[in-house]
Image (cartoon, rainbow, N blue to C red):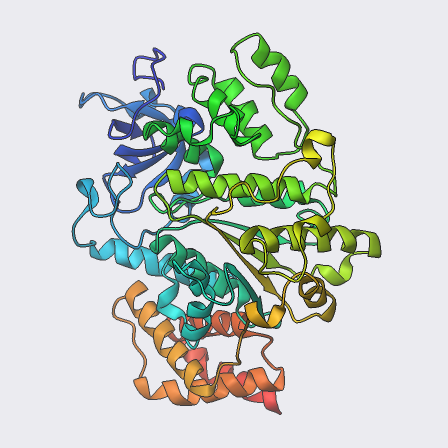
Length: 514
C-alpha cells in the first residue's frame, strides 16, 4: 500500500483504517489476492463493504490537512457503480468474518435499507437476478427450495447429496438457484456455482466448468466469492495447512498448492501464478511453475491440470478435496450449483459423450458408491498414468453436495438418468397460480415503497394484477416470470414518474389479449 507521503508500505490488514479519494475513510474488512483487492467498510455506509483495488487506498493518517489530490486516484468506473459493486449482507459481520461481531453490529440505518431495495429493483428492471434479499420477492417456491436444501441435511435421505431441478426456461430456475445459494450459506455450507453453455463453460471441457466453480467459491463467513485464495487464507490463519498435506495420503493437487501458498506470502507474483494454476485458468502453467518453484522453495512437483475433455474425474477429485478443506475452514461442506443454459441440444454427438461423463463424475462424487446406477469404473479417465490412478472421491466421507438446474430436454435428462435413478433426485418446478402473482405484486410494491418513500398505490390492485399476470403468461403474452418482475417494476416506475400516461399503458396491456 502507498502512504500519503508516497512511500511504499506493507499491505493493510483487516481492521486497519484507510482512505479512498472518492469514497472517503473506512476500515478494511478482508483482503483478496494478497492485498491487491480489499473489502472496505467505508464510514458513510458501514454495513455495505465495497471491493476496491489496493493501490487506490492510503493509510488514514488522522491529518486534517491531507488533500484529496494527495491520495491514490480511484478507478473511474468505481465512482459511478460503487453502490452496485457492494453486495448486501443479510446480517452485520465484523472484521473476523463472524456474524454479530465487530463494529458492524446494530440496527440498519434507513438509508442502507433503502439502498438495498434500490439495488434489487435495478436488477429486476434489467431482467437479471439480484444477489441477496431474494426472500423479499420469492413466492410459491418454499417446497421446491426445501426439497433442494434437504441434500444439505446431516442425513440427506433417499436422494443423497444430489438434486436435479427441472423447469422450463424462465420458470425461475436461476432465481431458485440463487435462493439455494443464499440459504446454503446461511446453513454454514460453502457454495460454488457455474452456468453451463455450449461454447465457453461447456460440460464437454471439464476444466472450464471446474474453473468457473472454484473461482465463484464463497465461504459462509464472507458470502462473496473469494475463490481458492480466500479459502487458503482462512486455513493458514486457522493453522490448517496440515489438513491437506502433500505427504503420503494427502491430496495430489491441493496439498502442494497449500504447501506453496503458505510460503509465498512475500512473493505475490508466484502466488498469483499458483492460484491461476490450481483454479484452472486458461494456459497450462504447471511446467512453468515447477521451474520457478524449484529455484525458490523445496517441495513437491505440481501435476498438470490440462483442458482434456476426458479429465472430468480428476477435477471431481479436486472438488472433493476442496469440500474437505472447506470443512477444515469451518464450513459444513461444499455445495456445487450447476445452471444449464439450454446447452445440451447444441452439442454434437462427440461432445455430448464428454458432457455425459462429466455428469457422471459429479453425480457419483456427490453420492458415493452404491447410490447410483453405475460405478466409478464406468467413468472415462484421461491424462497420464498418475492422473488415471486418481480416485473419483478424495475421501469416502467428503462433504460434497451437487444440484443441477436443467430445462426439461429429454437428451439432457436421459444423460443423467444413465448414471442415477433420476426420480430419486428430481425436483420439478410447479407452475405458479394467480394467488402467487398477486402476492408477488404486493411484495414488489412494498419493496418499491421502501426504495421510494412516500410512493404508494391502492392495495385493491393486488388481486386483479395477479389474475392478469397469470393469464398473460398462460396466453404467451408475457414470456416468463422473469419478464413479469421486469414488467411490475416498469409499471410502478410509470405510476411514480408519469402517472398521466397510466391510462395509455393499461390500454396497451389490455390489447395483449385482443
